[in-house]
Amino acid sequence: MNIPRVFPACLAGLVILAGAFVSESHAQTPPTRKIRLAVMDFDYATVQTTTAALFGTNVDVGKGITDLLVTDLVKDGTYSIIERAALDKVLKEQNFSNSNRADPNSAAQIGKLLGVDYIVVGSITEFGNETKNTGMGGGGGGLGGLGLGGFHHSNSKANVAITARIINIDTGEILGVADGKGQSARSSTSMLGGGGNWHGFGAGGADFGSSDFQQTIIGEATKAATDQLSTGLVADSPKLTMRTVTVEGEVAAVDSGQIIINVGAKAGVKVGDQFNVLRVTKEIKDPTTGNVLRRLTNTVGVIKATDVDDVSAICTAVSGTDFKTGDRVKTVVQ
Image (tube, rainbow, N blue to C red):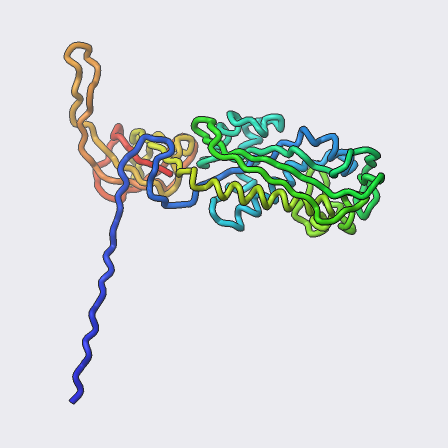
């Protein structure tokens, strides 16, 4: 006789955590996403003379190193990195000067416009060889082998040193510092030696991610310094908390099922954000001064942003009905 075997059934419970409203800018809340970073192009003013002589033209080595760093951080995956196109757009709109690259206050303003949690600013403090920079060659055109931009007096190893700071965009406070130092494993009579035919610059930019550049001794040192810096920035991640913003506004209009509110991207609103809609039922006033002490409200429903511009958002109802102009809206966005 076959006796059926009975296996215990397991039922997984689903726990839904509802977040309370908070007013702190960097609240300790359970993470629902990665911390968002924007990386400014590194300042290279202190090494500009050296790099111009090395490359035979004024190459933006700060942008080149930033691109390498962003690639490292994206591959690591600890942070969510803002796209360069979005950063460049804001910088252009704000007429941001290259001289402000390492300024925490300027960077904090840019960070708010980008909607990131923190912004990284940095500087290049060394970019050259380990011996005195005498006999540096100049000139323009293509760079390759041991010729243009070389230090011809002796064999040298290449050294690169960079430093970065993580800036709180609400306060301008420096919350993390990381350094990167790299030295080539090889020596050469030219910083561009060993790379064959590197010529990855034009219009003031540089492709430091190319394999040709990274085969040069200065490219080798640059990659080592950037990798070390990236590791340091990742190590700082436990110091950081997600930025949350309380957004409050009012219903500006209700039209054919669409609820338009008077807050938008500049206040931190994004497509998909949900708002509690509240209606004031009574105002409690100070009997002496007449000032409003408290407003009593009823919850009308919940709405969700489907289209957002700088100063407003179009929403649809998630729950509730009878939304009216003047109803208050409130949410916490990350």
